Amino acid sequence: MKVGFIGLGHMGAAMAGSLLEAGHEVTVYNRTLSKAQALIDQGAHLAAHVADACQGDAVITMLADDDAVEGIVFGEGGVLQSLGERTIHVSMSTISVAVGERLANGHATAGRRFVAAPVFGRPDVAAKGKLFIVVAGAPDVVGACTPLFGAMGQKTIPIGEVPQTANLVKLSGNFLIASVLEALSEAMALVRKAGIDPHRYFELLTSTLFTGPLFTNYGGLIARQEYKPAGFAAPLGEKDIRLALAAAEKLRVPMPLASLVHDRLQTLIARGGEQLDWSGIGQIAAQDAGLR
Ligand SMILES: NC(=O)c1ccc[n+]([C@@H]2O[C@H](COP(=O)([O-])OP(=O)(O)OC[C@H]3O[C@@H](n4cnc5c(N)ncnc54)[C@H](OP(=O)(O)O)[C@@H]3O)[C@@H](O)[C@H]2O)c1
Image 1 (cartoon, rainbow, N blue to C red):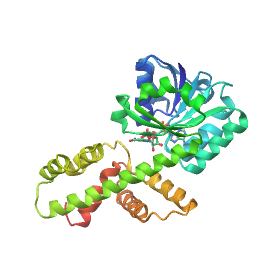
Image 2: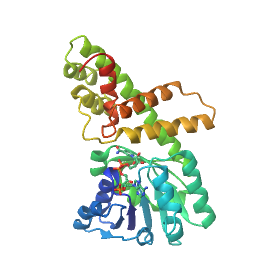
Image 3: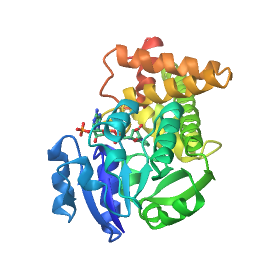
Image 4: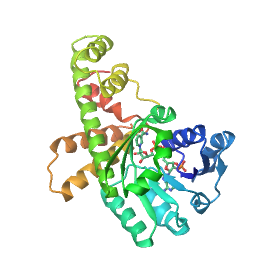
């Protein structure tokens, strides 16, 4: 397929790479031009303007947050103004339900095709084309994107026809991950304070009851206190829990645990952890326990 890709950060660059590897014709756009070079070397075309990426079969946006997505989509010369009549906009960023709804309404009003398809998986997973993709939108539009999802992900999970429901599912998932990070961090601080080797403890956990990828990946990072380089930076994690809480407030759903993990991420950032991975919550739990 002919596909535009907007947003070449940690995730976007890896995902655009997977599309190229699968043989799609990819045109890339990024605010910071230099990040496009590696993909151009792999055969991508460069879009000097957002509009140049919006004329193929589909254009994917993978941007940091609500503000970035709103600017790129609704701004002057943005995606909505530039989208070809049959071009599908696939919104893959983790954004609020409110902005997800604005996007869905904006495209519907303009008579343009739109799906929301946020993802689970970190940049290393994206680089292998092994993401989990949660997708919502009109079935024919979702169906038309199948070859793209197949190139970027190992599994695509359709969740319904209302695009913003995919955004809510993604936020709920990140809340669960953050809760596991908090629990792992507290448990690791406890055993370390007692003088138990955190690596042996990690092995024990992951070879018995706690075998899933969350425990094996994040448990290892916390045991090794390896919070740099960030696969998923603390400010992005803070954003997601804040957005989960905003959705919960609108739906009148108390989420006390989400409030707690949001505070932990705020603490991590306030103590200079802006550049750290969000598993750096482990560092906060260790500091609180008086550990180095
Ligand atoms: N990293 C993960 O593990 C992970 C996993 C699943 C989902 N996600 C989600 O995927 C999205 C991207 O994450 P990432 O890790 O790739 O983030 P990132 O490395 O920080 O990249 C962010 C991208 O957004 C662009 N951007 C930011 N603000 C902008 C603005 N105002 N206008 C135009 N472009 C702007 C950046 O452009 P510049 O290069 O010019 O700064 C860059 O291309 C986020 O919504 C994140 O929550 C991340």
